[in-house]
Length: 449
Image (cartoon, rainbow, N blue to C red):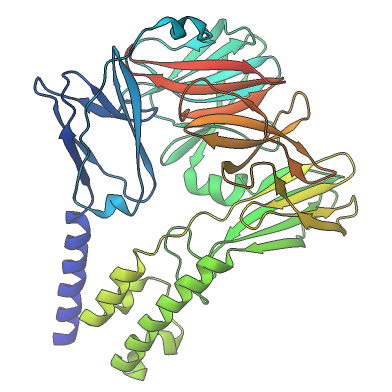
């Protein structure tokens, strides 16, 4: 009984400690009044007071956050904060803004016009494409709307939703899905461009069922599954992630899965395993065999259930600070073959129409990987595939040659830093960002050569 009480107190103490450190306060002095400070491409932010002071709480410590500083008459400034920096309770970011100089050199700057602007007070969350239509997901405080544009940016129709959705997704069957934090909504367009709801389902169902089908190829469905091996290592965020590709023949009534290839983030696995081994060693030395969840085989992967004393709590705290990136692969479909591209180890695995391994070679990046964003974008309308580069917050596209396995350094494809969404379609690159001056979302379009 005493042992259970101590364990409960320890768990309560750990939960309180974690909840007490769930935000980072960024503060500073910029020397100028009414400077807007926001998370890039969001409406969340603040502004400086009459003396140039500001304070902004940040609640997500797990990913890099880009802070956007803007003020009329001054050049925009971007400051990136890494997850390691965000572990601190407070961060002081102070600097002096210098007025923009308008000399004769400014005359040579090429102007551009926005493709589309959302209504005032409305942010653009995401965009998607359906033949000659552009779907624009727009957000307000607690609701969303789906707007339909033609390829010239003209408004054709719009539908409002009471729920809040933050992502547009088109699955392997061409169905349109609106993704929210907890729920998803499937919709379709009728002949008059009216958006009609089909069904609502949970986000877990989307992750588990819908997203597994990557595309159809040679009378089969290609599936991708992200798995975590709990019996090998505990998974925190993306630690130890593995991605497995299978295929299912369309005429198979039993829908049997046939193994194709598996990618493993070995670096994250090894790092996590070494920390976990230390926790296991302490736990096994402290817990009797008849109560030992590891020895009995009843441990469910939750580290808190192993927290029996301060030493284990301390090791769990260190372990949970280990950061691992998402292990990312992509599947590309061509007429006579498919390619699975490992964007961590830069390797291409190629299969023929019978799903037999036919080639394996390195992926070559023109920039030497310095600015490659570990992302491929497929233009469904033209069939071209582009590699995405990000340099100083600006997106560049380089065309991918599947026969050589190379991504060439291409052209500038956006006019604004760190777009909220970036897509390619029908020979154009579309970038979505938030205009803090006008309090509205903007879509820019650049012709891809």
